[in-house]
Length: 289
Image (cartoon, rainbow, N blue to C red; front, side):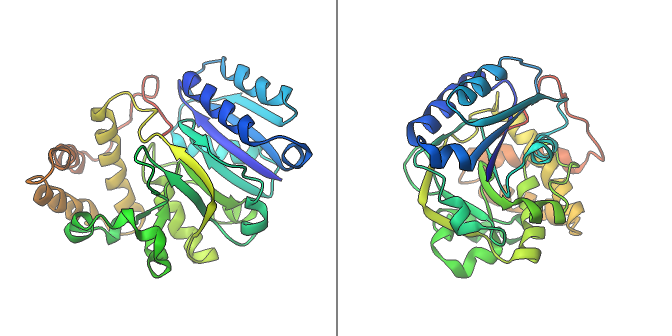
């Protein structure tokens, strides 16, 4: 069985389209016996039950649970613990199903992990991104993230964009799941390093497509940049490269001459590097991407 785990934080409106898109592409007994849903709502919004019930009324096994907002990874870990499928799919509430996902089991089975063809607003595929330790001014200028999914030789240096990540349940548990020291951002990159060690590079299944509305669950760019910066510092510490955040800061400062966003990210990262610890406001902060 495929267990689709979705962590939500005040994403009621987004989930309406999420559920509708799924039902549009999934009907018949094959889908009913192969797919279950697990929803984790981190904001206390009990209306999540409406979406769960809609899927249940269509015949799909569905569970939902309210949880304390301890971050995106913590929500995913809770969802995985409730899931009964051999294959886990971590799907964001701001994504849309563009095709049937029943074929995931045949391709990934219990020994492969990765993602599907994730498209953005421009219709192009953004399935993978470079692991932070491999990003540089040159890779940013060349926009390597736009084509790294096409080159298998690069797959050892990438991680699946976390809006739709496919992992065998047994491998997820064996590698320890998401590191809950991350509140938001880079938790999928850090997990991917461990999965690469256990299963090899990630796999792309291009015949299955989803659409992802980037940052669809975030309230402001300031919040996004702040959490991204804090997680960059955490990522470097967790993987044993504490200088990684400073290296990224220098990269962003150089790119700021070409990009206002890079300059804003640099300012938040410089601030984060100077902060030893920070507890996000978990009542008002989103926890899904």
